[in-house]
Amino acid sequence: MVTNPYCSVQLAEDHKSVVLLDQRRLPNLKEYRNFYSASEVAEAIREMVVRGAPAIGVAAGFGIAVEAHRLLNLRDFEGYRKELEMACDLLERSRPTAVNLSWVVQRIRKLLSQEYNSQESLERAIMKEASLISSEDVAVNYSIAKIGNQLIPHRANILHLCNTGALATVDWGTALGVIRMGHIAGKEIHVWVCETRPRLQGAKLTTWELQQQNIPMTLIVDSAAGYLMQMKKVDLCLVGADRVASNGDTANKIGTYTMACLARLHHIPFYIVTPLSSIDANIISGDEIQIEERLSDEILRPSGESLVASETTSVYNPAFDITPACFISGFVTEVGILQPPFTLQVLARLKKEYAS
Ligand code: MRU
Image (cartoon, rainbow, N blue to C red; front, side):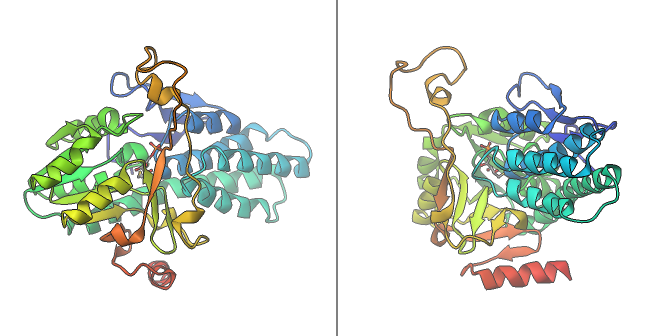
């Protein structure tokens, strides 16, 4: 059950569309929009109507489900399956860095390779799986929040990057979920919110979420983070993850690596808060993670209209970076806090314990 008064991603009751809260319009406008096909949902993910690793995964699952519903009148079963395979490919490719897209698509692809006697029965199975992925996300994030709360001292100043709240998931969020749980538990928390250039997910989304929850916070420019650490104004850094390699190297919003290095220099604990679904056991290290490069306009026209540098300026806009495992104090997951050394064996044990 969703506990916050806004939900970033859900399936419409008639199963004909995916309903997304348009995160590009926040905090000024709370607008829900309907997306009626896999290609519309893929476009919404690319355009960041919905964003945040777990949320785009859930949106992709629902995207395949609405496609399965939309194509029910296709007479030929094999043609139906092929169309759904194409929908999976499209959604999986909509953004490259977060592993949650392929994790969700793989779960649904498994159904496509099973025997069903009608389009309707396959469609029902896909709907069920996509809805299960969504409700699992809520339960997993709630566990993460409870487990992560142990890390928060009383009267903590917490540094946070990007947006990892309910908006980036179905509910609770990852790093912001931990912060929310700490606040509910009565700890006096104050959050330093990095604005998160260039798209300002911190300024636009995290401040909005924290305000809804009455959690004290202060907005800072990203480059103030080091100064605050030097002034001993940060007790803990909590951030999310888009893809974690087997050795613990982590892709997350651009600026995470800088924050992790500074935290190490100042002996400040730096935790990645992530569901196990963001761990990619197929890759050994961060070198294998594809970093999304976004358009120059995100930097050149931060508010959409006026240029801050000449149009011909050469721009490089990587959306994520890789933090090597050696800079990470631990991973807060739904099965516990994973401490270094981060090995595939430890991960496998945790996953097994969780499943039993
Ligand atoms: O480009 P975005 O806004 O999708 O990036 C999101 C992040 O980097 C988050 O920190 C990450 O997905 C974890 S959110 C639970």
